[in-house]
Length: 130
Ligand SMILES: *[C@@H]1O[C@H](CO)[C@@H](O)[C@H](O)[C@H]1NC(C)=O
Ligand SMILES: *[C@@H]1O[C@H](CO)[C@@H](O)[C@H](O)[C@H]1NC(C)=O
Image 1 (cartoon, rainbow, N blue to C red):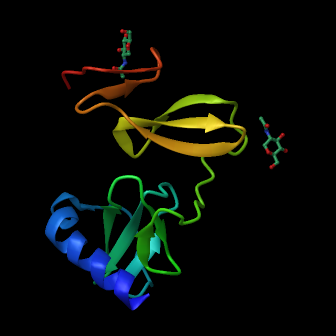
Image 2 (image 1 turned 180 degrees about the vertical axis):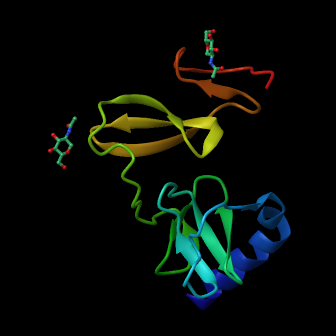
C-alpha cells in the first residue's frame, strides 16, 4: 500500500504531473486531499488538493485502484460507460485521442495511434487539423 503510493507518487510527480489538467467542476468539494476514482475513466484518477481537482492519467495500460491508492494492471474498473450500450466504438468524452469499445457490456479504452483522433462518423482514428 505504502510502497505503491510512493512509487506512483514519484512517477506521477516527475512524469505525469506535467500533464495534469485542472478539472472543472466541484468534484473535490467536501473531500479531503487525496486520490479518487475517476467516475468516467478507469485509466486515471482524480487528485484533490486544496479543494481543486486534477485529472491524473495512470501510466499506459494501468488502472487506478482506489483501495491501494495506486495504478495497477489488475485494478477493477468501475467504469459503466458501456452498460446499456450496444457493441461498437464510441467517442471517449475524456480523450479525443482515443475511443471506447463496448463489447458485451464491458468497457475497453483504446488509444488512437500517436496524434490521431477518433472520428465517430468514420469509426476510425484520423488526422485532424483542429
Ligand atoms: C437500460 O437499463 C435499464 C435498466 O437498468 C433498462 O430498463 C433499459 O431498458 C435499458 N435500456 C436499453 C436501451 O437497453
Ligand atoms: C468525421 O469525418 C467526417 C467525414 O470525413 C467529417 O465530415 C466530420 O467532420 C468528421 N468529424 C469530426 C469530429 O472530425
